Length: 77
Image 1 (spheres, rainbow, N blue to C red):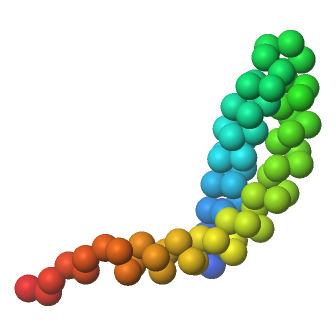
Image 2 (image 1 turned 90 degrees about the horizontal axis):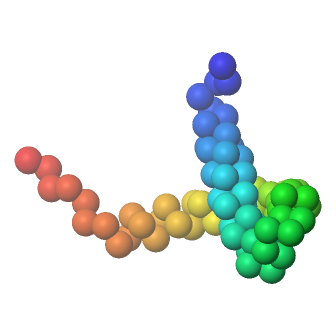
């Protein structure tokens, strides 16, 4: 098990991996069809994940701040 301090980085790694896998798969399928899909998908994913991971690390804090501004805080009571 990893120490809890690594949770945000692990979250970003897993989220970026899953999302880039899904998005690259859909985009690749649209372009190639089923012919050669798997190889083309893995090639696209191998490029997109290294871009997605640092992007999530940078964008996630911005998204959290935006959500905090857009969501009503619970009243104390």
